[in-house]
Image (cartoon, rainbow, N blue to C red; front, top):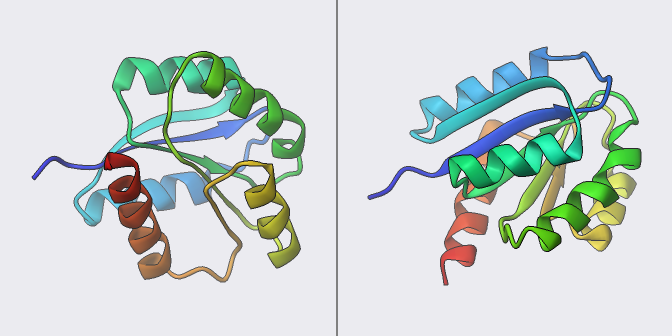
Length: 133
């Protein structure tokens, strides 16, 4: 069975990297392949890496509010470049209301700080399986 390939990155000037590194490790431990783009990414950099790495899902770590500024551009670029993969957002600043708004915006899933490892892993597996059909 092919490993799920997940791109993990942080948009804008958000420099809080601990969550992204922790999620990357968790996903690797769950048998997924992680492409980590690190901090200070623009939407175009995330999309370019997603295309080059042939990822199954893009995960954004958010610990400041900059993702609200960059996310619409990222979603638009994904459409423009025909990179049809789910986008998942997670981080300490994501509230239940934010999760609802993000899904309405076009994000496949959003998780706040209370999400468990199992919830995140199962969601990724379900989203990738859904995209395969």
